[in-house]
Structures are given as structure tokens and as C-alpha cells.
Image 1 (cartoon, one colour):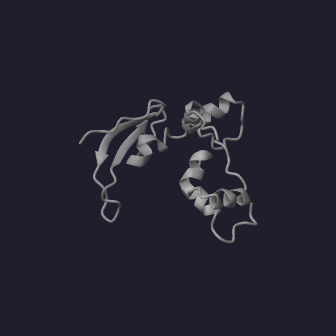
Image 2 (cartoon, helix red, strand yellow; image 1 turned 60 degrees about the horizontal axis):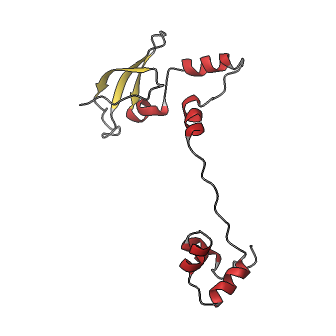
Length: 138
């Protein structure tokens, strides 16, 4: 089988693929890996850890903590934090008006989809706000 490609910031080196154990997840691939930091730490990791949930034996966190001048090592989420910075933030669209105004619009003959299109919302959000007993919440 093909070995998976590792994330670019991962320090794991795949040594071999291991057959899954009996009574474990049969479909999950496991790998014998070694950290390339020089510590010599070897582990057996499931595919989900190899593909990005685990980046190293812990050396990345220790190095990052040292760079930040921290003596106590907390979870720093090195790879995930960097990825979040590159991800564009979604701007929030206009909010729906109050429930009373939605009831008035519905009484004028507009459908939930037409109201949703007018406020760039989903029809499910409009119909949820128009359910009986929700008038006092908004």
C-alpha cells in the first residue's frame, strides 16, 4: 500500500505500516514512526495522528515554549494555530429582524424563502423564528 504524505511541518518519519490488531478498528491503518528531532522516540500511531493530529514527539512544543520564553509548557497548538491564521474569516451577514417584524412580513404574504433572501439568511432560520411560542424570546 502507499504510505500517506505527511504534513510539511510534521517531524514524524514513517518506518513501516503495521497490520491492525484483532478487535481494534479493522479499517484504521497504523504506522511505526520515529521523530526526526534526534531523540530516537519511536511510536505506533493510527493514521489520523500521522496525517496531522500529531506533529512530533513533543519536541515542537518544547521548542516553541523556549522561543516564547515560557518555563511551563501548555498546549500551544502549533500547527493548528498557524493554519487558523491563514484561513480567511467569514464576515457575518445581516441579522434577521425581530420576530414581530418577521410575523408582519409573513402576514403580508411573503414566504419564508423570500424573507430569507431579503435578509441573506436561510429559510430554516426564518421558519424556526416563526414557530409558535417563540415571540417573547427575541
